[in-house]
Length: 332
Image 1 (tube, one colour):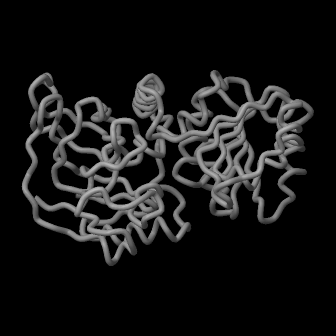
Image 2 (cartoon, rainbow, N blue to C red):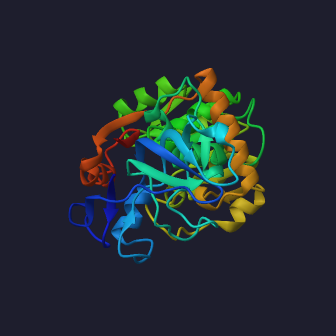
C-alpha cells in the first residue's frame, strides 16, 4: 500500500514522503480501515514542524483524522463491523493523548483500536468524516463543557475556521444565540451560512464596543475561544456574571496573561480544551452528538481545499498559510 511518512522534523516539502509499504494486519482489539480521506489539522502541521517534540521513530505515518470502511478486524472485535463506514480520531497519538504515535490516516489502510473508529452515518461523506476528529470534537467540547447553552448568548471567535465553523453549528443546534468574530466580509458570509446570528469584523470595528452592544446588559454567557491572549482582557467588560469560556488555542501568544481579579469578581470560569486528552466520557458524548447532528444535517463541516494523497506537503503548506476558511483534507 501507499502511505505518507514523516521522516524528520522540518518543512513539509522536505520531510513528507510517499512510500510503498506493507499492508498492516489488525491486532487484538483493532480494526483495519480502508481509507478514503485524511484530515490535515494545525496540530498535525505543528507536530511535523517540530513544535511538539522530536521524532519518536525513524518514520511515522501522519495525521489523526480520517474516514473509510472497516475491511478486517482483530481478535475480540465483532466481525459485524466489517463493511462499516467509520470516522477516525486520535489515531496519531498515544493512549493518554499527550504523546505521539507512529500510525496515521494518510495511508491506503490503517489499523486502529476499535474504539477510535466511530460509526459514520450514511448521510455524511467520507470527506466530511475527515473533518470530525479534531475540529468537530474540539468544537463540541468548547461549546458544551459547562453544560446546556440553550437560550444563552455564545461568542465564537474565529467563526470561519474549521473549529469555529463547527462550533457555530453545534451551538445553534443546541439552542444558543451565536455571535461570531471574523476578519473579513467573506468570512462573515461563511459564519452567517453556518447559522451565526451576528457577525463582527474585528478589523473594521471596535470589538469591545460592538460585543457590548450585541450582548446587551446581561452580557455574553459563554465563549468558544481561538485566541485567549487576544481577548481575555476584554472579558470583564463583555461577559455576564458566571460566564464560561472554552479556550482551545491562544494563537497570538502561547502564554497569555490573565486579569485574575477582574475575572474572579465576575466568577468567570475558564476551561482550556485539548481534544487529544479529553476524558472518555467527553469523547463518547461528542461522538454521539456529532453523529446525531450529521444525521439531522445540522452539522456540515466546511472543506476549503482538497488534495490528493501525494499532495500532502501542499496540504500542510495550505494549513500553515493561515488563509484557509475551513478544513483541508486528503482524498485517498
